[in-house]
Length: 196
Image 1 (cartoon, rainbow, N blue to C red):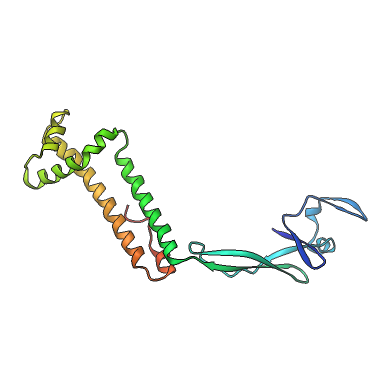
Image 2 (image 1 turned 180 degrees about the horizontal axis):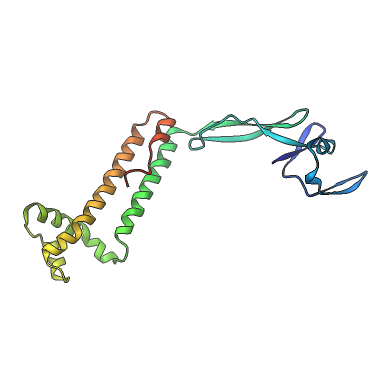
């Protein structure tokens, strides 16, 4: 529990109670933190009662605290500041992009940048091959450089391409939902943890 040290009806310190406290009359009081609230009050320590209204921390933040010294406690109240909707949307969209990037990066784990650079062409050829059985140049080159034939590479890459497409489609859907939100609560209601 937090306590306030009050001097001349002003809060001068906020925090946990000290284990010991030095007074001019009694010297050092050991186990000061174990005293009753009534006894602590005689030394100017009052429990803090937080009277800040409930808020959604995703898009509302507390401002500078205000302390009011009462008879038995110090009342803490924070004014609340609502975030700018555009800034909040950007923050949530950034989290969506980060999640998508992380998942896409997992697909590339263990491959060189040179190999990854060829993927768009190979993927386009695999999609075309699956639709028409026509073998594109990138797919043929990949088959020539590997232990798989064209059909084997297509079978190997098709599920991976589907996963990538799913990640990108989910990212697009979430960003569209966030951009369509008309207020902060609607942005917060977009569950960016689903669909991955």
